[in-house]
Amino acid sequence: MENPNEIFPKLPRHIRKLVKDKLDSPDFSLENKEGLLNLHNTYSKFGTVGTDEEFNLAPDRLALKLKNELASHEKMNVNQICIGNGADELLNLVIRTFCNPHQDKILCFSGGNQRILHYAGMNAVEVEELDLEGDFELPVFDVKRAITEHTKVIFIENPNQIVGKCYASFDIVDLAVGFDGVVVIDESAIDYDSEKSLLSMVELCSNVIIVQSFCRAWGLAGLPLGIAYSQKPIISVLNLMKPPFSVNVMTQRMAVKALYVSEQKDRIVQKTIEEREQVKSLLQNLPLVKKVYDSQTNTLLIQVENSEEVINYLKNEEQILVFDASHIKGFENCIRITIGPGINNMRLVKAIKDLPRNTSAGHLFWRSVGRTLRKASLYLGVFRKMFGPGS
Image (cartoon, rainbow, N blue to C red; front, side, top):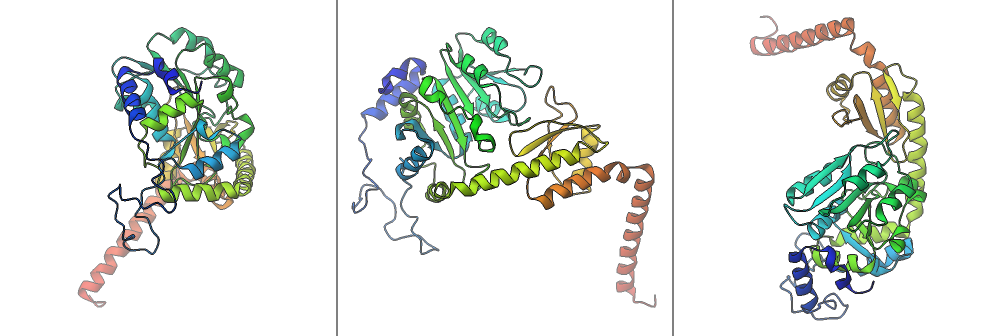
């Protein structure tokens, strides 16, 4: 499958026309070639205001240096890579590229997918969410029954964003084989268990797109970078449809630098896993915690006695924000935390450990008394400033 035209039957009619127009347009692939006097574009030729660095030229729209590094790192072909401004841009791009508004349908699974719901809504595409089975496994038979002629994309988060668990690989392969649409596997958090990556499926299944991200273990959330891996026909279309300069100069530079020292990322992953297991061990011994789920990412899903009380206490009294998963079906009274340096983790553990004592009737009473006294002292100080110490 070397010709982009081979993917045309999967594309909406208006996308086919856009792809054809792009293929017929002039190719400016030499625009960033070193030594080239480029008077074609309208960018300033006088450098950048406020810095000695030069950002006056547009980023390499093909991101060839970055793609070459990614290809070497993942042992992939450069033509099997599309990069975007974070995984979000790529997920949105897939929906826009493969789905007819007000006609086609997306399948995804409960326990996350807020991004998919958002972008599907923006593109007027219907979403059907299926419940996970038992121990958060994919409902393979339910998916096959739900597929219709209008089902164009199946989105699978692997690992799941809420539980932090990878699905059985044979279930994902089973769904991809025989499906006439596109299967998108979002591996944004796969670096924490890279052996579970399904990147090898790209060579086996022509309809699979693997999306990864530099925003988690690589620590580039401030310079978002997402990567889509697939066979050449799909990647060719995605590269033509994406905004040409969405990945800026600094993002491309920093990602290349990060790939040069990928062993540093590996050390961070190992440290994160050690901290995660320590936090899990401490939390599951607390009376307030009913269950701590196994995780293969940098997060932990925790079931507590009263999630609303825990969330409000942590936010208002301890200045700690956690993710509220309790509104998602199957995750009642669950919160999700993100593992960080030890001092942050211990602050959270201590806050949850002290919560029952700090929310008891007696504690609340004396805390209220303390607040009243502090206010009275404040007002007294203002009064003395206004009228003098002898008043």
